[in-house]
Image (tube, rainbow, N blue to C red; front, side):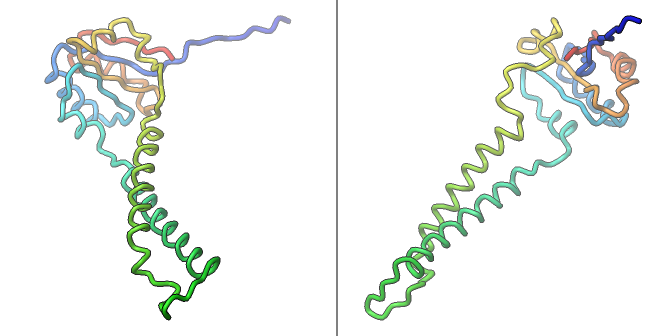
Length: 181
């Protein structure tokens, strides 16, 4: 008995092409109203409405930045406390060893440093960068996304993906293409 290996081309999703930004916005509204959740839009120009239509979920980045800033503040204060009180205590003129008011400026600077680094690295990680390759580049027509065409992609991870291609055709798309992985 021979052993056969079945190979299938995995789909990243289904892509619909539109001629105008307004057509893309209208299709995105219909798509989100239909209950699709894994949707992304591509256009040659920024379209502010798309951000509010498709990306309704908020990012966790502000919470990460707050945590980074608080960590920086605590690190700055702890380092100064350790140096002034524990490791090298010097009683000069009867002043207290742990004078918190003298610790404010360096702690503030570390708060800014940790917040900025958390923002930079958090944004890179949450955006999935660096990503030199994306499956949408497998669709030949997608090269027009940087000049004059507008595209809407429903990813295969969407719970309603089975009906995605037929639905995108109903939205008035000029073409609907499979996006291979």
